[in-house]
Length: 210
Image 1 (cartoon, rainbow, N blue to C red):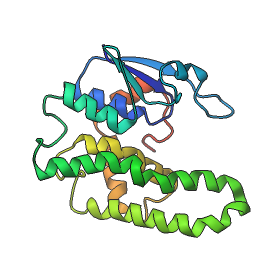
Image 2: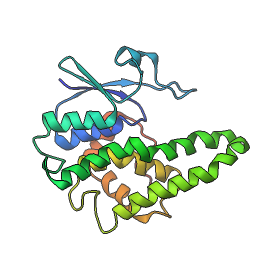
Image 3: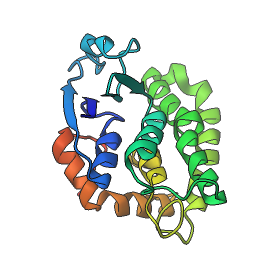
Image 4: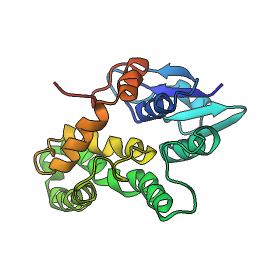
């Protein structure tokens, strides 16, 4: 049985969503953030030395990192669903999105999150952060022009992996400047499997806004 070691209100929400989209059986083991520090509990270090989520375990294997987990699930369990056929240009583009999400796109958003807590002390960094946000969110917005999803009309795992980028951008009030991202986020948040994953994962601050 595939086990998702799920930290509440975290990136592991998208792994639950992936499994719901595929209709796969799985078990959720939930870990709760410290209410004051918002850090993961030490129990996660017993699963993986980094003490981070998402982590999955299956048949003696332990896999962390969202992109690696998604790639593993697609290869072992998806039977060709949620990704273009291997060996095609579309497959390579799909792989790029899987790596881009955490390799580049999340960095300026994370910097914004942390530097904003510094107040005036963080002011010298803000122009560079804003430049990088415009670069990456602009790229994503242009990529979605005329498309329902990142690969076109078809929803894929690329949308799941990149969803956190779109949702965090929305939390920082960037939807007005990037309407294609806003429409894409609303579109994928309306999917039944997304809603089912919310039921499994518990409160999620980046979820649909009324």
